[in-house]
Image (tube, rainbow, N blue to C red):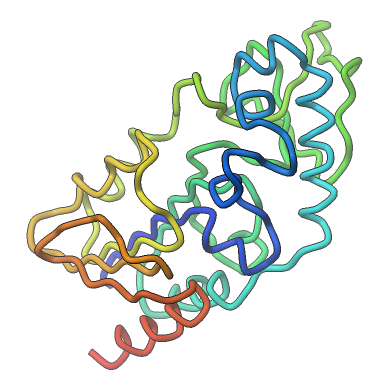
Length: 228
């Protein structure tokens, strides 16, 4: 069974109604990104950051996976599929995908400020409070990889990409590192697809771009892959 690796970004969830800060002049829900999505922002004002992610969690509960998420999950019937996502939402999971690597953390989880990925606690869509601490008395924080922090899952993602038979990039400009560097781990000669409504600056001999939104692009890709 061929291995397909999907690299997904904010564009795949935009059609579900989740806003992306890169489409709004560096503002995310009217907040400066550095105030709510950086480690410096957390140190400056942890309550603001906690409140911001509580609001994002509430919003996530109201939206649903779209057709692009669903098609990726359906392809598991025909391929060995791994999703490497920059998104912190759970829409891939809710659509039925079973093998997902979250590069930037997960919105529905929290962890101690001194914790690692494996210390994450699933709270669903519940709120986190500035007074919430673990059993040791250590403050709990959103399980998000912020700007200025290391990306613990990047090495695992690189290993997965290095074994792919097909690489598909959906809804990401591939300009934010280290995620943008993952394309360089793709084996020589494999087909690479890019689905994004904006023409890409990526130049690659094996790259085929569908210049369209994620939902229609994924339907088109599914037909092409299954017709081969």
